[in-house]
Image (cartoon, rainbow, N blue to C red):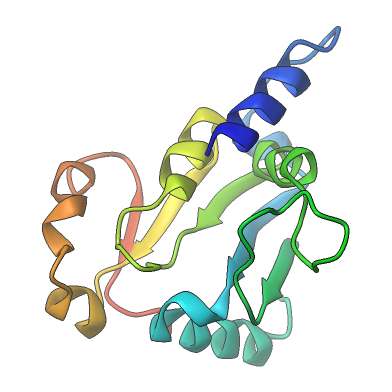
Amino acid sequence: RKDSWDAYQMLMNQNGSVIAASSQRKYAFNAIFTKSTHAGRSILADVLQMDGNSLSSFEQITDTWQPDPNKNSNDLLDSKSYMKVLLESTFTLAPAGHNPECFRLYEAVEAGSIPVISLDKDYKQHKCKDSLSHWLDSPIVIVESWNE
């Protein structure tokens, strides 16, 4: 998304800005998504709720997708805060939305955060599953289910 790219550039252009090493990041992982765009996202939200936050994490899970994250009238994380969290996270959980491949994969990588994707039954039945084919050999974390 252009708004996330602009926020990233602004954060990186600040004096003394560097991408921290994974071991120096504030959060082990982040989970920033809307449940309404794919059934697998609700499953992940349930798994995270059951986990009880055994690791340091940033979780912002909303029920309904909104077109503009920077509008004060919604409960989405604004673009600058979103990119800041990615820069502070070792891993970024990237559940499929309308398409298995999403902007979050690219945004995480540019922030130095390692994407985590699930190749669950919903992915295997998705008509756009081939959109992730170029990611499958990359240095990301791939799980068979969000329950892992």
